[in-house]
Length: 116
Length: 114
Image 1 (tube, helix red, strand yellow):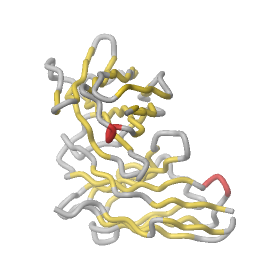
Image 2: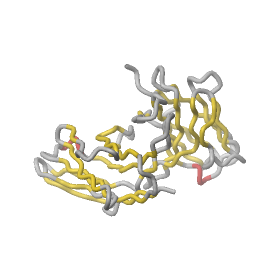
Image 3: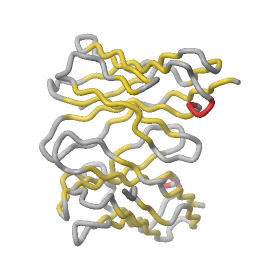
């Protein structure tokens, strides 16, 4: 079974600064996907960024980037130029590659507060 | 493109009552998921459908939970009878069903069992 660990229950960052959220996972799979989802207080889960395990290049989406270390099974999220709207719960998630898709296994989340 | 729709948004019931939640996935998405998110935790899969067939229901408490997706489009999740520990947010998600998918989530239904 896969497990996802987020060791930082809460983080805080000053607006415009950079913050990194940590995530480690455990799996015996070789082909899989990793995701960061954001869940604002309104509760709708929104995809932030995804990474395919077979790709060595780290994914980036505007101010969001990841540091994917496959051998170490580490997948951290860096948020640059933090904005007040980034305040939310952030979940790291793992998905095995299957032809019809597979469930997401989530970590326990990191609550990020961006201070003005 | 319309997102995943869920209703109701909130529901309060007494224990031992029954409740049903509805989900309409993104048009054309073959795979539909129901997740349970207990306060302070990450979502956990209850059931996964591919079209109208069940792919994974290993974590569904089948003595009280049931789900269906009869026409391969929208889905209902039912709890009967409800227990206090069923208080949670029930999230529906959908994906294309072609393997490399991103799952798109609905707004969720918050259930409180008293």
